[in-house]
Length: 296
Image 1 (cartoon, rainbow, N blue to C red):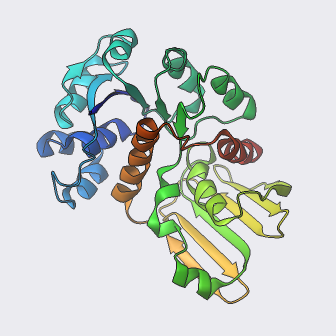
Image 2 (image 1 turned 30 degrees about the horizontal axis):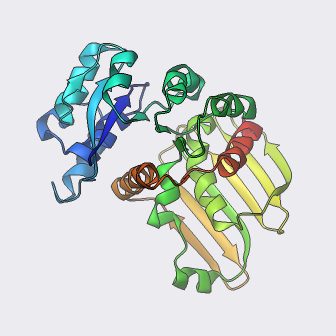
């Protein structure tokens, strides 16, 4: 059975309604090029369509606050039903993609779908404070209903393979940086770094470092002894980068492949729906949001 997905967007500067829908449905090349997000067309055009689509789910409905925007996304990503209300969308789908990265509005849009028991993928960052995270989870009807992540958590570019782990040895420190704002982009480095630590490791000391306007830096010492640094660099043209230092050597990891990261995250969401498995544990999300809040 094909899972029917509804997508909710858009927020300023966020092209996920276009790209996420295309990964399920395929896309109209000319309409996608007119989306205002040239990078999306660039990475989609590199893939082998239609074989790369996720086949066990389809985005069938869309709602945004702007009907003309909804129609354009629908045209670009082959979405059949443009909804005039969230209620209409809720009635027509099995699960929801909340493709907005304005965390302050997540509860506003997610609440009715949580109460209705619909599985929901909430775009990153899910929340900017622990109080906001807890408020969202109080409406969760069952374990695993909420899925959230930075897709970069799934990026092979930002994972240590067996050969790299041997080269680095026991991890001593990890330094990571991302362009743009802490509020929207710190999650992109926090989640991949947490994946490199033991799941039971906990922050021992957390210190925010004051920097230039528009930048943020957070130092975290973990109970394991590993030292981590997370930096949001503001308006600079630099890649997302994670530098790992171990007792055998050092290694730089640089994020490059957007498509495989998005596809892997979306597939995991669908897998959780199909199997009933919680793919996005509250404990991990709380650890992420705690660090985001401490760096605000």
